[in-house]
Length: 361
Image (tube, rainbow, N blue to C red; front, side):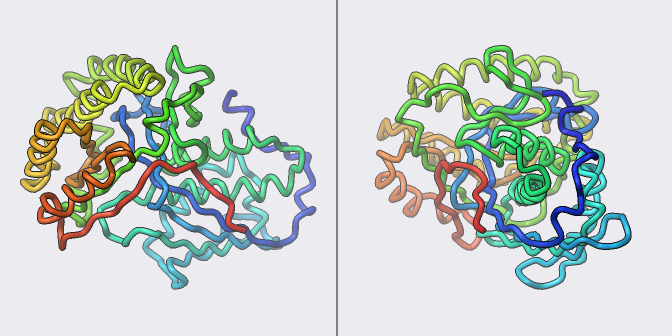
């Protein structure tokens, strides 16, 4: 698919749908092979692969009604109450997608959104939030163009979500998602995420992710600033090449079910992400002392028990503890007995692999 394929056919009758509403839930996701650095128009500098989560979701209802004057107009509610400080991001999203969805100027929208995870928990809500926006918009487009296929719906929804937040394109469809052109991943694209096109080994089909909330404050470095640091980074090209190599390795691991290699690659990717930030100019250390304490505890537990539990990190201090569902009882006990003390207010979230965005009504 090319960018031009996503431009809405202006010959379709825009007056055929007067009003209505949709409600969708869209999950967060956790990248195993990280993307860090992007080009213009939210194009990734390297491909990434993520697990879609199941419990950490944004639920968004979009009500729409035809209006007489053209232009972008909407009201925004968070948990049922007006939220003015969220509006600029939604305004920017609409402005970015109007080229591809010109019909949005014909409607006034009321957007009511909420998260299933605590607000200000330190979990990025931009991926789930923008994915939820995108699938709602595409539901309206499908009403206008009833011949639309499910494949096109998912591709364009992921394409639109990317324009709101890069990682959001991995929260539309699929339990394992690849975003970015990769030679050995059929149909992979820089424009949208695609479901991992191979059979995933049974060991990974219900993988668990317990998110340890080490620091629930606002991120010290925004994603936009962080990605921009890669433009003049001394190790950028080596990192981009490494990401391609690691994605190929992870493809094989996910098919064959090699947990030992999974642990090594996923932890290396997490530490590489933070190493890139520590060696940028300006430089940042986003891990906290408790992050390092947790990592040390995980390594000691794995050495002692041979249970293949591992960690990954986003661009912050929180720790995602990944482990097979077959080891859930042992790891859950370990987390509660040894890791919870390093979480802010003892808070953590139990999650696992999910299936992507779901239509609620």
